[in-house]
Length: 119
Image (cartoon, rainbow, N blue to C red; front, side, top):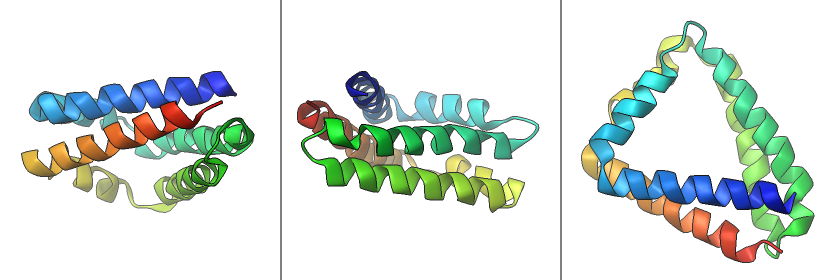
């Protein structure tokens, strides 16, 4: 499970840096990835990641943070399963460049925290 935390932290750091440096291309790529026939299928990913976060909480110094992230991911999966399809795309298509950079900073900090605190 330590490898899972390592992988998630690296993905978060790469996504954060790309959102800070090239926000327009990153959001364009994200929007293209979200255009599927059934957007509710994207809820499976957060559900699996949330369960894996809960299992890997014991392999981290800040286990409460990993448990919190797992619960948030499971709640996000339930929201994606229950929300109307057009509403799911609304947040991704209307982000401004500065907002995208703020999200990038948040993802970078979160990725570094997970990377440093894993055992």
